[in-house]
Amino acid sequence: MPFPRSSGILLHPTSLPSRFGIGDLGLEAYKFIDFLAQSDQQLWQILPLGPTGYGNSPYMCYSSMAGNPLLISPEKLQDQGLLTDEDFANLPEFPVDRVDYERVKQTKMPMLRKACDRFQANASEVERKQFSGFCDATASWLEDYALFMALHDTFEGTSWHTWEPEIAKAHPEAIEKWRQKLSAQIYFHQYLQFEFFRQWSELKQYANLHHIQIIGDIPIYVAHNSVDVWAHRDIFAINEQTGEAALMAGVPPDYFSEDGQLWGNPVYKWESLQQDNFRWWVQRVQATLDYVDIVRIDHFRAFESYWVVEQGETTAKNGKWVEAPGEAFFKVLQEKVGNLPIIAEDLGTITPEVLALRDRFEFPGMKILHFAFGGGPDNPYLPFNYGRNYVAYSGTHDNDTTVGWFNQLSQHEKDSLLLYLGSISPDGIQWDLIRLALSSVANQAIIPVQDLLGLGTEARMNFPSKAEGNWEWRYRPDVLTGELRDRLKTLTYIYGRAPIRS
Figure (cartoon, rainbow, N blue to C red):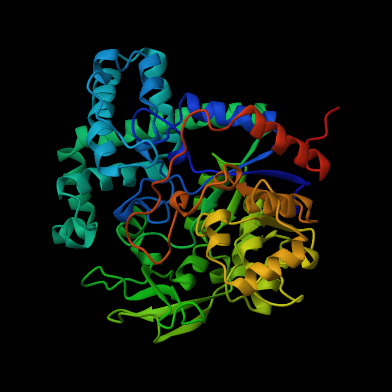
């Protein structure tokens, strides 16, 4: 569905300031929403909110429906009487500009355990009913997730396919045995989800009251070491004997990578999904839309056809394209959900069939300005080639910042950009691209907060070719100044993206 003309900021909550070493759902998140509202932005785009596994990537989570406990605000727990000043007395010295995930886990998880114990011992009758109601409402995914995470703790963080055979294969008798044995740990993980979604719901309500819509993100694939694969192995291409991915996801060799990209996630058994009327996928989208307003679907092209690599391959070279029932799925989803507030991440090598699927359901596509200046006038990322039903970005979480990108351009690319712009703004190349995105005909424009701040490569969120060291950047308190707010507000008004007030 097309969306009204508007603009917003891309920022993952982990990048917010906090004295606990990682951004969370506390005061700084509310201050960020205030900045959005005061600068006439109407969109806040985030990355997936799930509990992250290896590499701390929000695109490789233990669950496609759960929330990340590390985003729970300890200060909000203190407001509830579940933590005290004493619990914050010996906080370590955290990096100011980055997340040290291991130190954060070592600090926050014991705090969350204390809060859980106090909640379990002292919760009021109303709070107990709220907790029970949450567990009942989310039972379709929470029961499996809480058991999976309890088992994950018990087996010292190893992948589920290496656990004891009966529970690795999710035999009903083994599940019942472990549910009883790990009841206390299961309660803890249920409680963490209860608090996460309570805090997130309050934050989203605050955003919506300030006329800010939240754009969430659904990765097309899920991590192999996840509750989704463990509990729903019938819809994933896994080796029944070993539990490993039998058919792996990725993309074929291209201009950027002669070996392609081998992601390792198991691909879907689309025939099994379709026979079940896509129940798991529908549930996943509905669960996401319970806590965001709009959804960006990552690697949208895989709903039309996807690249499959057999187990044992070490690169993505020897794969093949397999057709997917995307049209049938989105028809079912439309019947269940109604209007589909979906943005299609349609970057990379896209075929006419993929574009036809996107346009069949009127999903906005994406246009990235960093891709616009390497070719001629027919480059589809140049603003004069846009249609209206798109989201224009200066860059995304997978790109360098605009300042970093510009500094690494070839002289030919810099010359092309300079000819297009006429001249570079004395305030920096980032403001030229912000202006280009906002002035385009695309219905939405999204700017990474790093570009607003004029930061270089040191503030990049993700290097897709690196397995570690990503997703760490944070901004410092008080950098979202009144001057920055007013400048963004002015450009937003000039280019017709400010909210219409009655």
